[in-house]
Image (cartoon, rainbow, N blue to C red; front, top):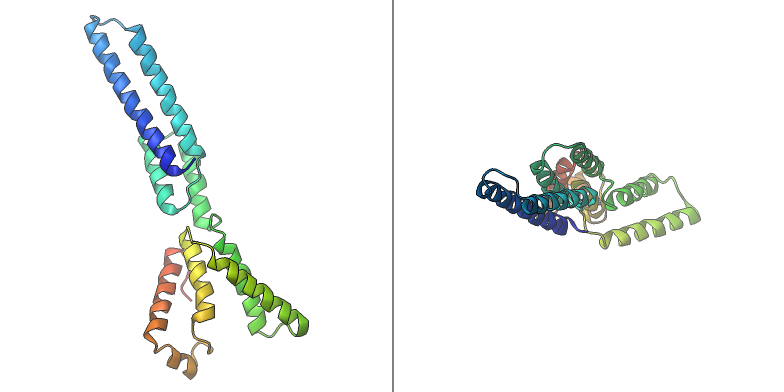
Length: 202
């Protein structure tokens, strides 16, 4: 179940429960302060549906930070329960680590290969094999949409290595290339993405 469907189901269940509690209160007053079994049963059944909808939401994994925040807000409306705290902690750790986004480990492997190639640590047939693997990783990245700040930062890092300045950083050649407005904008976007992902800008 998606977060959107789970949130809508919980919203409906809570609205039904509120209506049932209101009806039970009216029946109690109309019955001269005596409980109305039928109204009480309806209220209890509505409460059970709320609890079931909350469990479904707890079990649903957000696909991005916005969905995680919507999930947290909805669960907090129901009070601080052990299950709520556990769900919030799990989602927070997942997004903070970037493990929810496949672009993060993909970029890490590509970065390692790039460093080895640039450092001339591989030669001959191994060099060709590593270049093929690097191109394969980059081709896979093209088809992935970032879903976390870490994933966005990883995607921009991949793009920066292929489309950014080709001269070593700090050289006269590099400074000349960085006069390009497009490259300066890309560098600013990359820095912003790194900061959003909790990384130090490099």
